[in-house]
Image (cartoon, rainbow, N blue to C red; front, side, top):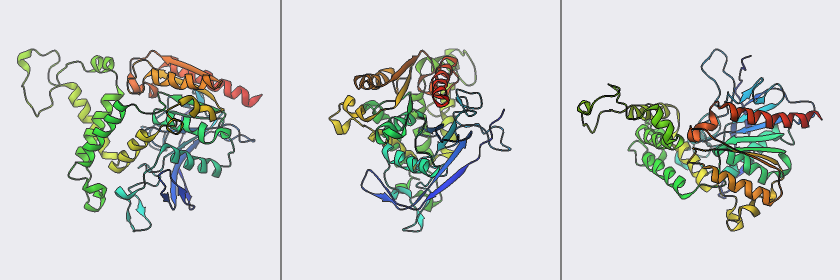
Length: 381
């Protein structure tokens, strides 16, 4: 059975105070829901998205057969997060470029696009905005909140900001904060964007241009970190575009042309990304990634930071994910166990790198299915 998605939006006229001390006077949040809310409103699952995803989590749009949601392998009728049993909510975060209020939209104070003047947002700000959406849907407590990568950080933050409103949390391919290497990758990508001549200090909308070169490079850098060395070698190796297994004499030794398959692939990914993603949104979201660190207020002590959580956790990592390594997941597991919290942990031996959390690994999907089966049994008890 094909799940048909219906995009929706809610307007919030009341100001939202932000962690930075600024506030946003009013805003819209784009979202989608799948399945039905049960009579006691206890079966809701909130799905938090990662950097370049959106509220379109599952299903397809009417008349658009190639419009599957970004986690369609995970969510839907009969899937691990079964929409015949759960009411699933996908929400687009504040500052994104897929329908929720962001830098591309009009600043009511000026009548012009926000651009670089859009306030800095954090993971905690997103969670506060999501909580308002959940309130508007009439839901007091979530059966579960889940997400991968940056989405996993939001799921973790939910358990700390609203501990009584979350019964279960799935934190997948994520970390309690970014290490210096990850922050460095983000900064190089941001510099590629802000030094693009078409960036115009973030106000490129007024000039009718897009900093495509910067976006392409940012995406290429990011994509390299999402894949494992094994996958890149298996998929591309040292193959040339024009001749597989070419002899050394076939090299043109050019500094400009695309010679290797991996070069072609990265340029394709960069070109595609620059067509649909907003440069200011990229800067905002990567900064939110950098800033997230719930242990900061506790002198770096993660155990103390996670003491507020009372949800039951599923934490999943992937063996070849070097951007959010299994060691980072084990830090969370250790801190939760030291607080005597309920934690299920799995490290999936998968070759795909960080992107594994989006792929159809049977062991991974079976694990998540079993965990949600347990939640469904709790609901029916």
